[in-house]
Length: 481
Image 1 (spheres, rainbow, N blue to C red):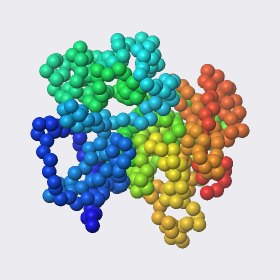
Image 2 (image 1 turned 90 degrees about the vertical axis):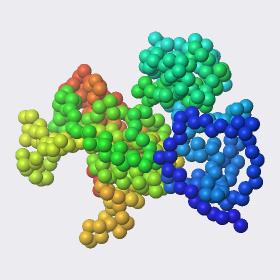
Image 3 (image 1 turned 180 degrees about the vertical axis):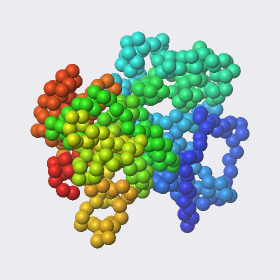
Image 4 (image 1 turned 45 degrees about the vertical axis):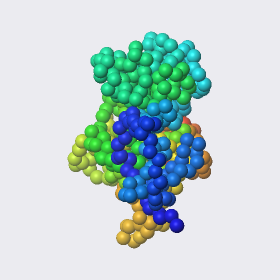
């Protein structure tokens, strides 16, 4: 009978980049050992079933106090890359993570068609131009090392590569074979996460390697996703708190005046002011935009998602939420301003606007199925309903901190459950790097456009489809919970 054990493995486990585990042929020793088979593996609360390169399940076992894990399976679970050199009997593990959506990202943001098979020099250089412009440095041949050199220069690392002497390069290229003329560039690429120690640098460039290299270059140059981490990160709560501590109300005078004009005219009851520098740049197909004002709520939402086995990339986009302050809320002149909340009078009227620091938490889920699961989780654990409320104000089904009566989350593409999300319009008005976002029903955009034409004729309105959850749609439509 097999003994059953569970081995918990934290993602905090550090794998040294391009780690070589040598087992030279001359030193191979065959042994017969007694093992405890059937050991289970759990990575950050998620059960992992180790498989080999062919997808077949492989065993994890323990012997004499040591647990033996398959390198390929565990590297994959921890987001690392692995390769095996049969001639040297070496396993190479590299912590540069594979982006399994690299091809989709390059298509979405740079209109680069999916690359397959062996690439021509022209195809790769055209892709570089799509990302870095027509003046992009071109690859001088079709081998991987030459492609890496071009990526290093285009990603802004040329000067760094210049400091790599022969000895310094050799120290970074242990177990990696690179043509001498490219050694400094590949060494710099490995040390900055632009390239992987598992690649064959003498080989002709193929589509898969090109996509990963280009995606890494996009990230290193600051043209890619802008995010804090993943739901599964052990310290994602700290990252959220740290980011939130740097946020405060910001302003664009032109857009603020236009926003006030929209409120005065009754074309909008409020809007969000955002700054491009915080854009997450996620893939819309996998992304939910989740609005809130309580950072503790964001931290607890991370735990809720993790408890359901759902992972996602997490970004925090600050926004200044501006809306009309109603006098029955209290005397506006008595409201004390804070770094994240203040009232301002609308000039020439007796009306006031609230300026409150809030956030849009952007979540790019690993799968569309996980994205679709969010609505049910929020409806159950973060949506207030009178029917769920006890007489003392508590709730029969416990809710996470900061639950709202009308939570707001949305998608820029249609959701699978069309009955749970309704199409509205985000009336995006831009002035430089700032934008305001008054929402409206699909048929109610003309009032906003009319005010913009009258008050700020040099600005335009871009109508963007937004699919919002039913609770927020009811709020926007003047209905109840």
